[in-house]
Image (cartoon, rainbow, N blue to C red; front, side, top):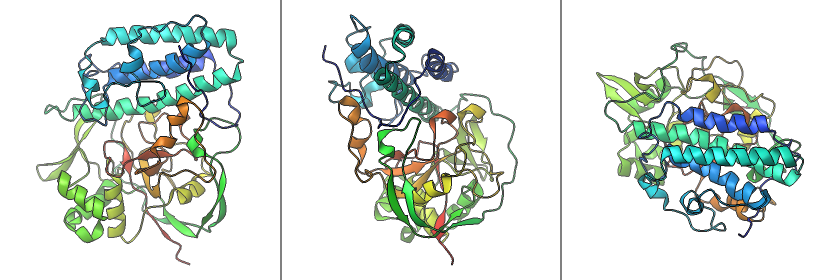
Length: 426
């Protein structure tokens, strides 16, 4: 069988993963599915989402296809048909099953998918024990682990979207005790601007779209000290924000009209007060929590309404370069954004992915990697907007200041929110 291309990172040094790290990441995925029934794992609520069962299989397919097929002696696939069923978008690997119809795959069963995971995990563990010093193989396994962490977040976002269609509003997990009822006042932090270095450099893992490191002119700017809250966004709604075309980009206003948006995704009125569906069921909205599940269009319209704008991804990175990547990530168990308690520029990491005004485009000098994994990022550099910082559903070890997430501007089912920026006042 023809082997596939292997490289999607640059020359940065990557510590070889060991068996315990591999097992921990893989175990985290199955743990996320533990609260789900087989029926929960089967459903697909929209073409952009995938069943949890498919995520479990696809992440396994990644290791089988890109690692075992190349390095395992006398490789034989677990099931030849899985090569098509669980290929996401790798054209150079071969045919893919229709993405909008993944929920139709009642077979293989969930138990068979877990058998598949065990089979591949045992084979990868043997390879790590025998050839863990093979830098090329170690690099591919590390890519696979970060790829799996991306799908861990997608399991939560996709399950939330699917459960929201159930009129009984079932909870994925019990709600944690209520967070503080107030957040820090919104302030502004100034940055001088300069010719700044942007992008990943040095040791540690990074996806290829985080480089090459390059210089970028950044004019003086100010950044909001925290994320925009539910209370602040409700003021926008109450002021007719969704009925005022002058606040919206043309495509955004078309989306408002086409989709009948009147509030963020999962919001609804309940006895005069706003409620929203969460991974802990239908709950009252907490005023001090960051607003979540808004599109780029909504974020941009809100920023215009309050006389500000969204930051560029370069401004965001300049602000984040000297900040530790700590925050409300999936490990907290909250599974929802929490109020700010930080001084200075807070909430840069975790809580919600922050929309920027930057389109997802290649950095100067960028070249997609050779082979199939060159399709991982570069082919999507069109009609997407960049988000930064991670969310309450992101694994903490997966995020860094140079990480570039990207989604279409109308996307709302991700944990996405708003940070304001403006030109420096002096």
